[in-house]
Amino acid sequence: MDSSELIPIQRLVIAQSNPRARRVLDTEFPADVADLANSNRCFNCGELLVWEPTPPPSSRRWLFCTQHCQQQAKYVRYFRSTAKDGRQTDPGVLYELKIKRAHVLNGGYPADERRLSPETRAFVVKRDAGQCVECGGQGTEIDHLEPLDGPALNAPANLQLLCKDCHWNKTARNLVPVSPADTAAHATLARLAARCDAVTPLSFADDQERWETWRPKLTSYRRARYLS
Image 1: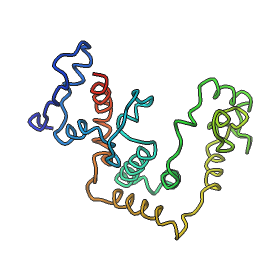
Image 2 (image 1 turned 135 degrees about the vertical axis):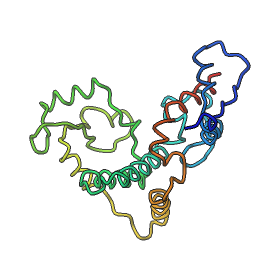
Image 3 (image 1 turned 30 degrees about the horizontal axis):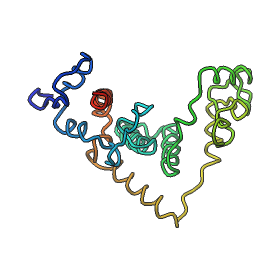
Image 4 (image 1 turned 60 degrees about the vertical axis):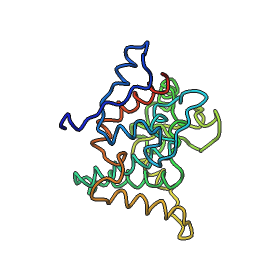
């Protein structure tokens, strides 16, 4: 990229006591990315992000308003990248697309709520002797038995060790087809299809290459702006 295409993002404050914050706030972005960085809006839906009264606990929240928005953009990027490099003939990729799409239609996968501590993971692996409880093969993934609320969700009693294939099969069994009467779901599918099939990305968050290049700097920049 020619350096003439880059513009310095304006400093929010005259002086910063933190040298690292000064460097972050002096980051140079392409003009369109600079506008997005300064907008404080969700990179998926465009809604204004609210970070009060405290900064968000997840780095995702500097860029997206919800996990659902993050996962919509992630699905579009995955679809476009696998279509571009020809991987959509791979059954595993097709399965991943199906699961990601299903989660988007159901309001998003609750990744934050289902995140397990290393201690809990180690306990479940040891308890299940490293074996898939379905087929007896090598267990590689921890599965939630039921979508419970509160602490019970990630309690060991609600967890089991599965191999990848058994985990996939269980997830596939639980998928519910979209009803023809579900107009909201069909509208979401139509919006996703338009973004996935566009010749050029319809939004910055849909562009895999540019997103991976600038996402870390955008996260650091928005955090530095807020904490200034």
